[in-house]
Amino acid sequence: MTNVYVSYNNIVSALGFTSKTVVEQIHNETSGLKRIHDTAILPDPFYSALIDSEVLETEFQKLHPKSDFTRLEKMMLTSLHSVITDSKIELNERVGLIISTTKGNIDSLDTNNPFPKERAYLHELGNTICNFFDFKNDAIIVSNACVSGILAVAIAKRYILQNVYDHVFVVSGDVVSQFILSGFNSFQALSNEPCKPYDKDRVGINIGEVSATVLVTKDKENLAHEAVEVLGEGSCNDANHISGPSRTGEGLHRSIESALKQAKLDSSDIDFISAHGTATQFNDEMEAIAFNRSNLHRVPVNSLKGYFGHTLGASGLLETIIGMHSLKNNTLYASKGFNLLGVSQPLNIIKNTQPNKMLHTFIKTASGFGGCNTAVIFKKTN
Image (tube, rainbow, N blue to C red):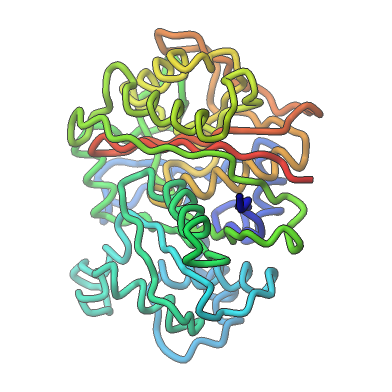
């Protein structure tokens, strides 16, 4: 059977424009979240992790663009270019492209945005990314709420196992916009302080922006040092509520069990969990229940939302990349913002960054609006 790997990778974020830089910042427990007070966006102050526009423009111009591009497109193109260059993969008919996002160029619908409203169509985003690099196949858009980033990895793996592609580039991204912030604010879900996943004093989420890219491949001869093998994956929709997760963690529990079964592993074989951990009351409680139902409550777990906020359709891929580097560096990274457990079920939250030479596997989980859930298990290759 063909093995599938996640290999070369890149992160464009408020903490840096390379995966290595970003991971170093996380190792030092440095957060990209900043207090922002812009009444043109929201009447009250909020915390977010925003990419520096000047730095983004400087990096993007190195690609020698021939036309105008949106902020999200600049983020995605910059990140994807790095991975294409590092991997040295020829973009032929056996190479696929998956784009993961929840809102795409939603800001092109803003009144003063210079781009046509048609730019908001997701297929337009796909065409723009494809044409820039001259991919030979149309882009596949994965837009399934906040599981999109990690679900895209699972879909890439399936395409390779079905012999549709030999390699798939997955690029993800979402931007902070008035539309997105006002939407979460209407749910009374935004926190006016840095978020605290799983903490008893958590009051809600922060929204951030990022673009992240990986190469998913069957070529074991040309792997990055931090590459991981995809052992198993599962996705399940609990069909509970348009914006609220199952109170029993049903969908996430079933996704985890499917991933474990496919990987032929037991819960005791998992070395750490890279969780969704949005710091809302309902999400964190649901995850705690699901992890306990899957007998993962003793496994070290972190949420990375305290460093970036919730980056929506990019979060799952972003956090997968950091999990890959965690295995390579033999280090468990702290769940920033956590102090005292605030969920009804026991969890082994990573409070401080710590070395651990026994790390071989991790599971990445994500959950999103509409009841979607995804879990993917990765194994160190080196």
